[in-house]
Image 1 (cartoon, rainbow, N blue to C red):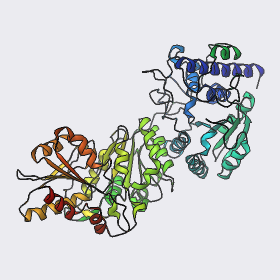
Image 2 (image 1 turned 30 degrees about the horizontal axis):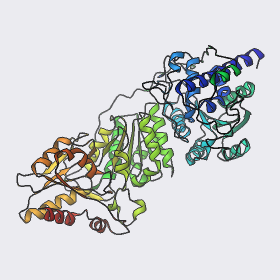
Image 3 (image 1 turned 180 degrees about the vertical axis):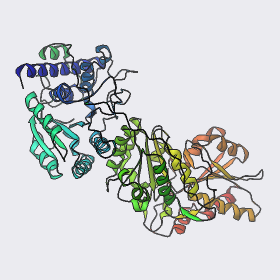
Length: 609
């Protein structure tokens, strides 16, 4: 590298450090030292290797840059300033109320693909974006992910590493800022970049170990990474935290704090600069994929037949995939059980197997939706709990993903409690901006699978393992936020509100009570979030007693959704839910033991009448 270019890159890196110090000082908080260690790496990337049109962030040919170490946001915002995307005045609004420059990056900024800050997530999301580029978009953009060395302790990193290596994702480069120091002290391997290289190498990655403060080595590594074929690259850059300022350089105890003497530090770094960097544009502008919708022909099921809602999901997803080319399916090695295998057989190019790696499953779905695809990710409802933080961060990313959890509740039967999703409704209801759906029959399931496609945010569909009666006619419409009143009369002594498998128990209970001359209302609350407030409030005021029944824990599920909706009206609300620890038994025995079957509903009505 010519000496003149070397000097320019060093000057830009110094400016990035200065601006990281300045913005954190103005905010009175932040992570300047974590930003300073990676400044040389990012100066070279932006000046020489990144291909991005900041005036057109939606250009499908743009590279993608993910700051997995989201706490280094002062560095990212300093880069945006250098690229002319934000002003110096905006830079100094860092962390203030109303500022786009939040403590950790979010898509409030158009150049940020996903929210980061929960460590170990940027790289799995990057795998999803890289997979989309290679197998779906077929566009030669590159995905760059900046990781910290501390986050390499996360299991999700190695789920992503193995998958990327197996897929040969040459369009993915992970840059690890090995600055040796974590939040409370040294990281597990310190500056032993070889320890990390051996791990990545075992998964088939091209590994490069460099001095992360030498622009020449950095430039060579980035060029090598972009030119590598048939495997991803990891650049392990040995750096010093707080580089350039003696007060904090390679010193413990400085993490997550603004510098005590920022003006002195700025002077030590050579003072404030106003350098700009011209980021290379993508090689060519490409028109994003457009998929004209075809005619959607959902499967049709005859009333009175027995069909598992998970089976209806698979068949409806296949129909949706035939009508909409942007729909993709992801699964965690249970496609024969979740029934996404039906989609996989029909559209193998749009099916992605992630094996038993639920964190990566959700992260990859987030990555694919960055590129405009519509991902449906499926596994057992119980196993989504392992990916809870990824679902939480997907909501912060404003991601539009569809999650489908099968084998929910005790009704799965003999497999026992480790396989029973009993917390999923609570988990997904608590997710910001989410939609939670729980159909009771095949036609309702098919309609809701289609309705999910255009629903923004995190959308969750809960399906049942066993066959249930088809009670709705083919082609019926089910709006998100709606419900179905299945039994109602002026003589109702109570209203049973339920969803999914227990709808059929409620209807059976209503028939038993009717034979005794006792009338009850039954509401199928298939939309658990948002709920049909109007119907619930009407029931609360007419009968005064609501009995909620759910194959779920009593905390946070359907019962609490009903309570949230009607509590101001003061009705009596009784929750029938799974309160004990189940064992192995038949589905009918499980429902009875949990106190959520027809007999339990009948007993509750008699007790309350």
